[in-house]
Amino acid sequence: MTRAAPRTPIPLLFGPYGGLPEELTGAARDSGVNAVWFHMFQDAEFERCARHGLAACVELKTLRADFARRPELIPTGADGSPIRYGELVQGVCLSHTSFIAEIEGALEEGLRSYRPAGIWLDYLTYAGWFETPEPDLQESCFCDACIEEFCVATGIDAEAPAVILERNEEAWTRHKCERIAGLANRLARTIRARLPGCVVGAYMCPWRPDEHGGALTSIFAQDHGILADAVDVFTPLIYAAKSGRPPLWSREYLDASPGFVPAGRKVQLILDFLDYPASMLEAASAAVPTWGIQLFGGAGLFADKAAASTFRSSVSRIRAACA
Picture 1: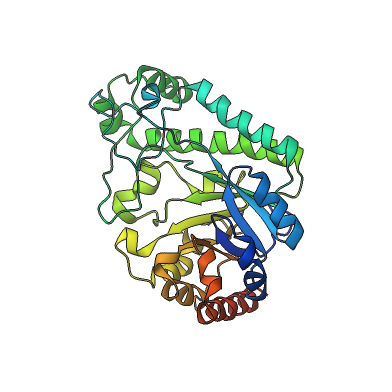
Picture 2: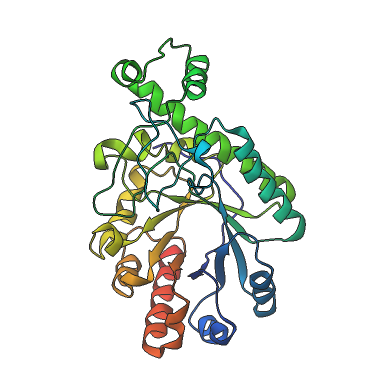
């Protein structure tokens, strides 16, 4: 495994994703919370974090859109038709540069007004959905513009999707991963130029590279090594119940992560409150520690003394393991 270029020291951050109500802020702080993650640039969340000394961390939406409103963004499948999709799909056709410009514009506007401690890139993948026991994995994106870009970038002359997948699958997969990393690098450069020291994170498909036939790269186009120039902290979505996995998945992922996450980059899990506390306890016992914790929808636990005590003790164990 290669070693990525060193970065400024990354802080250990612990807290809920989805905001933190005012009435729970004191209990959360007493339980080891020092950060809050929330969607996009919300004034109220920044103001609350500033008053209570919490690190404000933004989830920046990237490659996800409402296909009912934006049908032009639907990727093309290998059969030449729009991909199958339901309510929970991420990934858009990357040849729509105007949509990419919208993402970059939203980031630049946010950075003009706010100074987050970290920005996590979300939906930074090709089309699909992985928060399910049986994912519907489809090859994409085969519109004329995407195929042309592949041919120009690689020097390969292959117009038909079937030919690409049969004869040039490895080059196609790497090209997709490089397109995703290219967007990540552009966003990261903007963040670091405007706000040096801001942590750049990325929410990741929580699969190892060998799972589901290599779908982490071949379908979702997320390659940790190629993304390492842009990303300081990789955050896999360890949503056990939703994905049909046991709570020990959090520990198993961490312990396997040195095999595919470049040395010099951090892994910080996001766990689902639906799996609390079992998944949190497993993560705290991992031989390879998580660099902090996000808890999706977890703010409510701090209203319960026993649940908050478990969070506090887990944070203490993780901090000791990271020391």
